[in-house]
Length: 174
Ligand SMILES: Nc1ncnc2c1ncn2[C@@H]1O[C@H](COP(=O)(O)OP(=O)(O)O)[C@@H](O)[C@H]1O
Ligand SMILES: [Mg+2]
Image 1 (cartoon, rainbow, N blue to C red):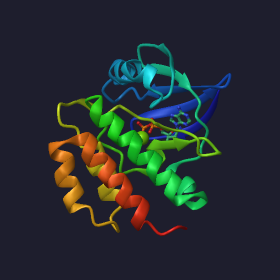
Image 2 (cartoon, rainbow, N blue to C red):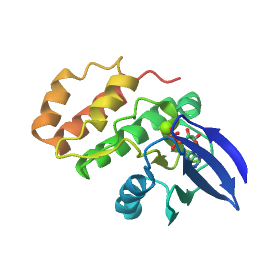
Image 3 (cartoon, rainbow, N blue to C red):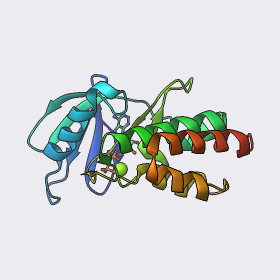
Image 4 (cartoon, helix red, strand yellow):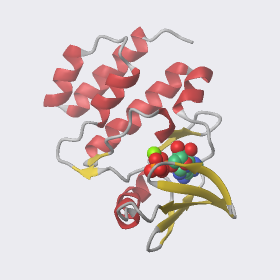
């Protein structure tokens, strides 16, 4: 197995084209927890496909290494709109990821036709998730969205489309 990453909570390997995430021994065992979120998200094209759950590991789809950081350099607008949409959809599904401020938790296809969110170790079930707020706070600081955010709190769908159009109008192309 080829080790492709090491976080403080897990080690990531590539094995036969699939990703094995092994949770470190001295850390609480998050395999079941992360698997539960991935399982729930399976049909929504928002997260990697889950293949197997073990005692201290999960096996999932390999999504490449093209993160939000690289995607922004290629097509800033497209990358941001896809990330915003993914954050919004996680909100609507009641999953609060909590760590969307990290570029590498968004992985894109090279042609920017899709994005997936990874690492649900810290995720929570929530009736008022703040994924979209996190996304806006980290990556869209230059866009004045106070009014639209207020709208989002009241009517998420309407607010989301208002935020989206404002971003389309205000973001400078890279
Ligand atoms: N499904 C995946 N496809 C491709 N790369 C992945 C995948 N899952 C994890 N990685 C890589 O491994 C790194 C660490 O994974 P992550 O789930 O964030 O672990 P940790 O909980 O240790 O932060 C990611 O930033 C990414 O580079
Ligand atoms: Mg991580």
